[in-house]
Image (cartoon, rainbow, N blue to C red; front, side, top):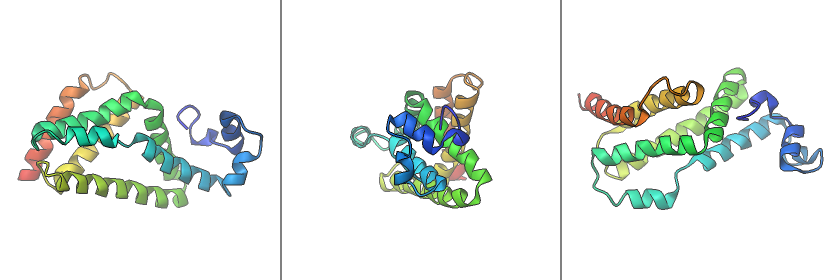
Length: 173
């Protein structure tokens, strides 16, 4: 997905990448849409934070700096797995052209956002639901810029600190 885009994700390409005989992928996926759905599910697993790292991070005080640390971890994972995030972006773009894919992908993204909101609130981090949604929107834009036009935004780490401050201030109004 990251290298060739959604159009390049064919059964033959999957077979070749996996080093299996031609026709193998079609035995596991009844359609290309099913293949795309599974790619989407796998990408979210692949890009999820390491539970041990989350647990370790949660040992810190529940303050603004902890929100910054979690948000910066998204950047760290982005830079560590650029291909995974590009694949996710490709799926988003493909979902704009395929209503059936869009419906399932929308539900997946919505569920991930709700999980993030619940984690934030249940962990006692400062801010409310709106804070998390604003951070999600801002980080989505930062990720797109970082993937497509690296260097445009400058110091992404400093931007994360500013995003957390501004999102908390807006939510507090």
